[in-house]
Length: 318
Image (cartoon, rainbow, N blue to C red):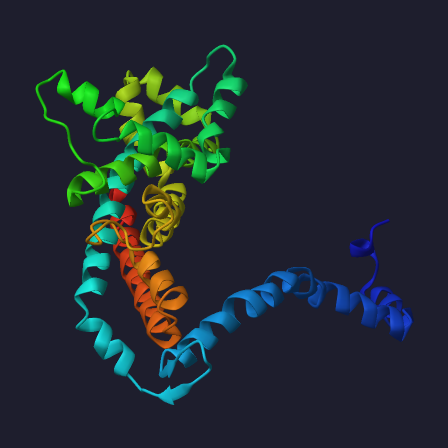
């Protein structure tokens, strides 16, 4: 006989018969245990995320250097940054490389995931192989791509020369350097995003595709009418993640210029993250670097909001 079939008075007596300590532990397990299980994340975030944010915001309001000298500056660092040509050049470089890298990367990852979602031989091995660029050392990638985009003996210039294009100095010119770094970023991260898209595609019910096939829908129409709309939550995650990574681009352009944060002889591919690094650890102006970091944080919020609103419209969501 279940407890639901017992008379109401009997059930009340059973509840009253429980020891007070047992009732308290039961209530604690139900209400407090979920918070205890997720608390390590929030404790780590407070120590290594929230505290550095507050610390950086505090020192962005001071003139703070390596000697420990602090002098109240108010919004002076932010005002100086808004009038700093080097900062705006780094901002333009960052946004341009982000757009050049992210748009092709998302399209390639989406179509690659769709191809990996098909039935094929050695499917698991092929899926794992697309992650190999991600586990490759950034330094090794930079060495290889530096040779590929070399001015005199690079493979890319040799291929372009077959079509009558003159040799390009990929590190000395602004737009070519953006393209070279964006290519490096795409090579490393396209497979990673493709695997995430693939995981999202495998959650789509197969019944939808079977019903569409019965109705005579082609695979192309199924992709546009079923896969893309159902993949929207995954696309939002990937786009936001790529926005954060693209606007904080540091390793690829840094290694592309032999570890120099200048980003070229005239800063032609210096990013905001490299600008922050340069001001903090070479100029030792920590207050100025902190203000630049907060403006970068604001830029990321704006970029993430724009991309979120754009992706939400896929599939008719408004």
